[in-house]
Image (cartoon, rainbow, N blue to C red):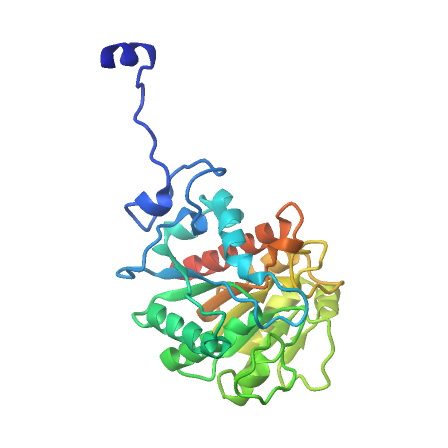
Length: 327
């Protein structure tokens, strides 16, 4: 029977391996796999919590308890991972992929007990501490934007502070909130400034188009400013503001106009295009980045997965920036 099978179905080439999220032998490089099947890790990277020799660990924080409008961002990490199935390759216009120069793994998701909200912040901070303790850079997929606050705490403990914040968003997220145990995705940078985690004078917010009577000294490049002055001027201003300070990069997907990212909890008209945002990110190679995140993807409100696709490309651009620095 075996000989008959070999005559009818000759094995002209070895069977290509699949499910590289499980079977991948190296953290570097790429291996072809059908984009529409298999175990969906971030960019088909290996699922592991062994960080020996790892440059970047991608992890999800599936939280949406802190939202003020539409929920659903807890499903964001899974949606972004699925959208990266087509990015297991070199990235335009870099001419290389992040995995050509960086050992990248998918660390899985942060364990959260949503029935005990008071434990959420500490769980996220501890998760971040474990990842960055040995020098691995952390790229986080949200989840609502509150998650950046405990992640910032862990990064300041590791790298010192205050850090510069490079913040892409429709909202400034510096509304006043002095309750120590609140979960709110619109007040965490108010808390971060009060706690001394970020330096507002050396921080910048891009794409803002909601008002706050007190922006707490943070430099704001509103969406209208970006539209008027363009990508090159925006990059130059960001680099001028943050200088040589260690920086944390956070990208709320609602920075993009709802035409490019409808699948989010608090959409605001008049935002950046995908092209503008990606081009600005490409200009951040000179920045000393210590941590990164992409947040607020809510797949329930998405159409044709365009928000998840946009977030996947944002995350890939961030990794290409890190890879360009390594080169």
